[in-house]
Length: 115
Image (cartoon, rainbow, N blue to C red; front, top):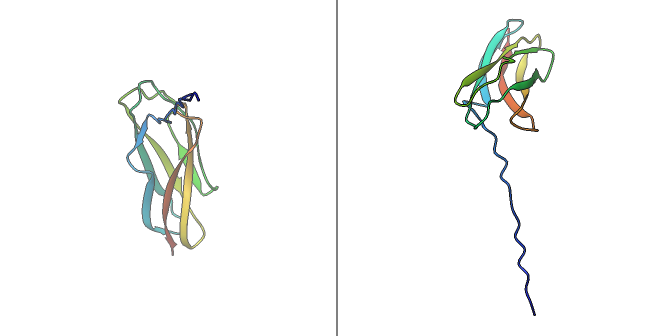
């Protein structure tokens, strides 16, 4: 009996972006006041990356980001402004797509809207 060995190659999905944090706790946020927050990342890959899209999970979040390429070793920031008219605990996200991956990255922020 002859055994045939089958080699299976597994390619690890490497994302060349390192986020300082993917979760921001805002604490108490005053109703109808804009709260600024940011998510910082570093390009740890071998090629430049570019943010293709970044958007909030609801109309209460406005996102801003650089359209420029981020070279290897460079750091960049995605800025967001959150303003809610609803009281209570919240957990929202910013969905980010880059040239580094076909998948979106979810960045989270949470807190409580108070009077």
